[in-house]
Image 1 (tube, rainbow, N blue to C red):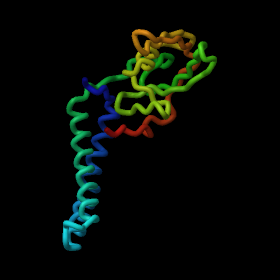
Image 2: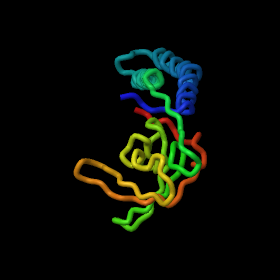
Image 3: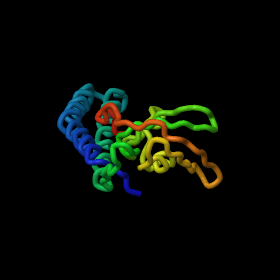
Image 4: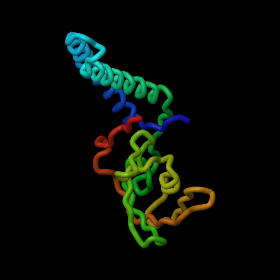
Length: 167
């Protein structure tokens, strides 16, 4: 499966890679060198901790590079009054008699605990390209679905603040 990313997602990932290579990597290499100079490596916790952080950084760089390499670039073709990427949507769920607010984002920015719903999620797929007043069916599984009515759609406050999720 390819991750669906916007051009903005890719630019953010490239910026993070550059930062990790030019700023974080040299600092972590220096930490490893300094910890190694403290002597006996078999009992040197600082050395192992520094190596672990260095390896985490390298792993994150490889992860981001792989995500960019295998990404499928998507564009938001929704009109201003339709649900699309970067839009915040208020829905009403009659079954629970409650309103919920979500922002539709690409797969790499999803964070359901903070209301950032992927375009690939069941909810995201159901809402995409619908308008205020539409009632949509959200199919969670073959045996469970529910209805929701779209009450409001507006552009998200600042999509640059959405962090690229880690692995």
